[in-house]
Image (cartoon, rainbow, N blue to C red; front, side, top):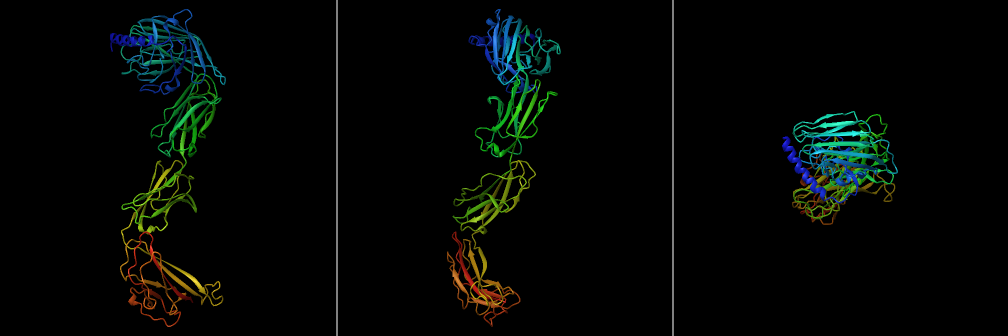
Length: 621
């Protein structure tokens, strides 16, 4: 941009600033200071440590009197900063940042500074700004031993323009720079390390300098603007930044964290921030540029709207200090949500991070595959077990394909401990009517091995948020037979029927219970039970079979004279006709197989399995 273009653009910007200033009420001479809300593309890493003085109450008429204009600023840590400002030369006003489209501050660095932090010329010429009687009064819990007064180019120093800062405090230090909106040109600077820092303008888009002086009571700024010029001021003593990051994953997508820097005495919030979105952070830091040594406490809590309690996370705090030799004690992996930091020392530039790691959590859920339930009343009991202890369970409700109450609570478990994931039938449900598949996911990226089958186990680690689902798909609509065999002692040769023992000669009754849990009936006259007798048991003509219908009834019949046969074959007979041996004794040791043939078609289940029981009497050899 040419110098003429510079001047025209700046004059337009100055006109806007002047019109805004005319709307400002008579000066209240009390204001805060503001942090930038964003670093910008060229902003320094420590951009959040500058608290820029709000000059919204500036009154050019008052400032030009012999008494000047008094200012009072309440800083974030409660310190009150006061000074007197006298202005002479070309007129000035306060302006918002950025002061114009070509300024570095507000466009490429230190974005979003609130208020009107720039003292801006409204006409070409020389403006002298004398700031005297700088006094800092700390809150009752703090002291001020030293602080830093910051000066910066609030506009852009172009050709024919200049800017200088004089201090009666520590020599000016070049703290940071703000890059130009394009290119890489900076004005010429001189005087770093002395009590006068000067900037000589350059044509085109230029960057800006930020300088600081330790503990001045008086600062004089001279602005020379052939196309207008501006300056801005900030204050620093020491700085601390606090943020949060999440290790592993959130327990719930709704979980967010609020982190704050509080005054230890009284608990006033000096700076705070909150995580957002789905990223794991670190998030935009809460920044405090403190001008007083006051005790502070760093706190972490759940933000409003979160689903989980802070106790569900392990909170650890670590801090670093880019300054050396200050003696400030820093925490490293301190397990806490509230840390009494103490006081910052002058020059500290501390960065702290709360790391939130969820304690391991498990959830077990139920889904139904194609076709839903085999029977309308089928339900499933899910359980997360640690050894013999059930740590979480749920039993489903619902009908058809609808699963209600289908997930255990998200359950906090112990890292490094194995847990099994199981299901059981509830009520009359038969798990054999379903195929079951287990699938697990971990919201955290970890090396934890996830189970792949029902009844499998998992050993979660810190940060793991594991969700597993058992999907049950009903089998085809066939008959499904299950048989259980039980026995009960009837008598023995010594005790008779009173508390009999399983000794040679004892009589025992064996029972076979058969259930059809499938929805289809068994083909008529196809049911055959062939029982292989153990060597210790003899059965013969005293078998005395008893047939008992279940509930619901099986629909079968059994004739004890014609529907039981025996075999002494060396191999198990495949058909009822192959069972051809006739016992020669009440308990014949030659009998190796008993063949049972109920007649008819065994009915299918309608939700409760149909069943029958056949019992036989034998003797222990």
